[in-house]
Image (cartoon, rainbow, N blue to C red; front, top):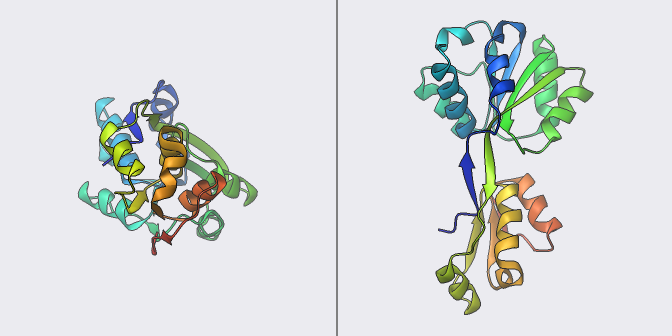
Length: 203
């Protein structure tokens, strides 16, 4: 296992805290990762709130893992999408009524979802509840294995991890095949000049 990124708290909890203090103003809460669920609810509890604060807001989970993580907190998502498809999400929220959306994400997350929601007429507020920080140094054992072709597959779980991994190992990665978690990671790998041999389905 080669960590390409490490997860930290956001540099500034202020935007998230302000949003958590006025949840009744939003129609929808959109969470795209299980990690986002954990970090958001941890902060809610740390700041004196509890799960009753979520009673009046409809929740969309993107991905089965996100819906499952909500269920661990005894929260059932009002809607769940199997994969991150920004246009499908925008259509779901538009058809479901209500335009005020709170989007939970990484502080450095991609803007595709927010852009699609805005294009669909939603009023979107985004809050970062965690940050992804690139790992600075490659693992010498992994570097040695890549150098002799001893690694067959590289499995990538995010576009951010793809970019960080290429920064760590560069052309040495060409000795292995890439498998990705979904289309955003696939696009990142290809943008970086590498081929993708497999993409998870469902994402």
